[in-house]
Amino acid sequence: MTTRPRLVTDVNYRNGAAAVALFAVMAWTFVTAQFPAPLGFGEGSITATIGYAMFDLLEQVPDGHGETEGFLVAFLVVAVVLDAALDGAVMLARREEDDSVVTALADGGRRALGAGAADESGSDPGDAGSGAAGPDAGDAGTDGGES
Figure 1: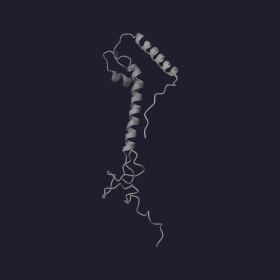
Figure 2: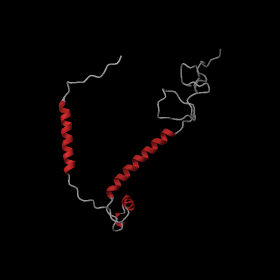
Figure 3: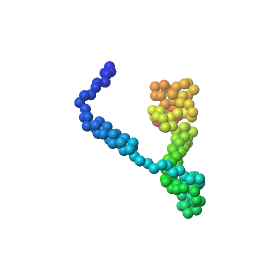
Figure 4: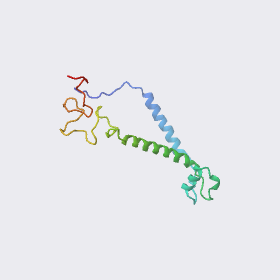
């Protein structure tokens, strides 16, 4: 039987008041902040200037390209994050030695056979109650001796 949720009335209101006060201070700070007018980046190529900054060739940047060294850190952080995501995707998509697929989803400790998780009888190979033998059940019933 389930019970319905009850309203808790013995709470500490100081934490909520502190959160509201912090929100008010931050909102007042952001609303009243004075920023100069945007200047733009000039007539040059931002991408080319980032390339010059990456290889420490800032003395060769043509006039009018502007200052873009600040973009270099963001560019490198995004590159590292995308590289980590690609490495993770490759790791999750690789196959084991016996051609089974490695998945990120939990299957209760059972291994899927190739692309499908059921054998020809339609039952799950790792299901203990089905009587179906899994992929590694070749010598499971023998003790290695002769009868």
